[in-house]
Amino acid sequence: MNTGLMNLLMLMILGIGYMFGFTKLQQRFFAKFSSPTKNQAVLIVFVSSLIMAGINLCHVADLTNQAVTFFIANNQLANAITYAIGYFAGMWIFSLILFRMSYVLVGMLTSENEDVELTKNNLELAWTHAIIIIVLAFLIAPALINIAASFIPYPKFPSAG
Image (cartoon, rainbow, N blue to C red):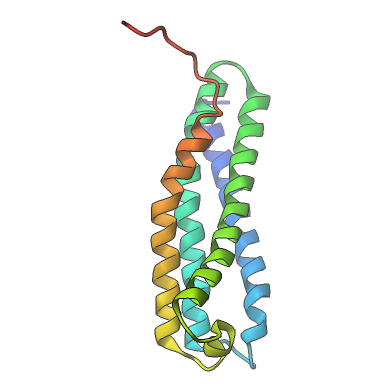
């Protein structure tokens, strides 16, 4: 099979699984705010968590593409699959942790109880949380990807000095 096509299929399957799993877990988390439907504030935070996960997914997909291409070029299909699954699983867990940590951060920045305020449809708090989580994803994901990239065993070249 063509390397590009195999890479595309792997990224597509892992990406769909990543977003589907993250969405389902977030729906379960936000179910406590439903009475009987989610209000605007809850929807804002829910959608922002999906955007944050999507930002993280874009970064990890780029790294995974590079890793899979490298391993397939070196006839290491098992490593290509292992790294791809590992990177996606790691970023999925990181996205969950980042979302939960954003709750702590917003709780420290505001005097209100976030759960109560979201239930009361506090849009200001919802937008504050949404912006914080999206900006954190843009700031942290590239640094996390740099760390993850260091695990790919690229060949070392001698220095020219």
